[in-house]
Length: 159
Length: 159
Image 1 (cartoon, chains in turn yellow, brown):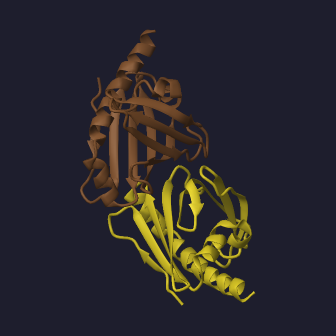
Image 2: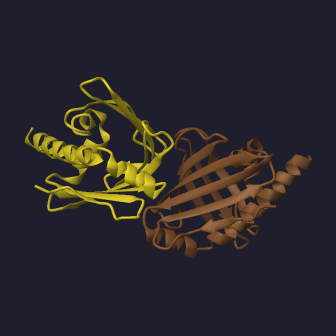
Image 3: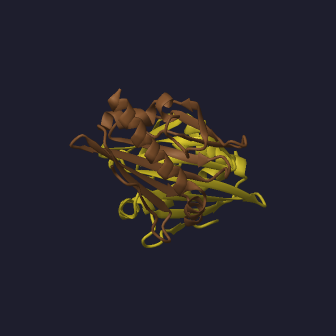
């Protein structure tokens, strides 16, 4: 089982996240782009996710909301740049709790021997924005998401 | 008349461009978003620009092509993140000559005493991408564009 690596160099407006999954690339891509699968793995375990829109095409918009047990809602939205494919997904990303702060996410997937390495690079409008993201609960969300995705991929392959 | 400032710190995947224009913000915004005005100032003086699409809304796509005297064509495209307004425009940007290399542009406009300060921040997927942009003919394009925009704004206000 892979382990999630999070790299955030000091003074750079970027975060790079890598993780290998024991599943073919097409399946990983499906998990990233099918809203019915997305809600089963994206976000921390104790939050419930709802997808408002997920229009997987060039210029398509996406928006989802995470809700905690107290009923607090956390919205996120963005648009796809270019047509998402198993080779890669490029999209903008904005947390609605800090409106006007946007980042550009580039996700690439590489398959080798039936396993898929997913690399996500996020570049921010400033180092302060990047540091704000790091200071938030991001890491827990990323690690929970990756564990949940690994579990989902195992379930889908067993099914 | 303002002067264009281009800032590119070593080792940072970012370029910041600022320029003050002697025109109210709403007019500057129109020049940035009306394709009929855009072709009159965007790009180096010796190239001819054609707008393929310019769908100024959240998720809207834009694409334009610059053509030189020899008939060489340079295509650019991207999508808008959020609804463009005189306060700001956030969009992705890709030069089709180097496909797959995308940057995130954030443009803000501030008006003071009838003059408008335009600040454009571009963040790239890597420092290499940023350095590649600097090494290209970018600076000439930026300076020509800003001079042409200043001239166009003067013409529109005189008219």
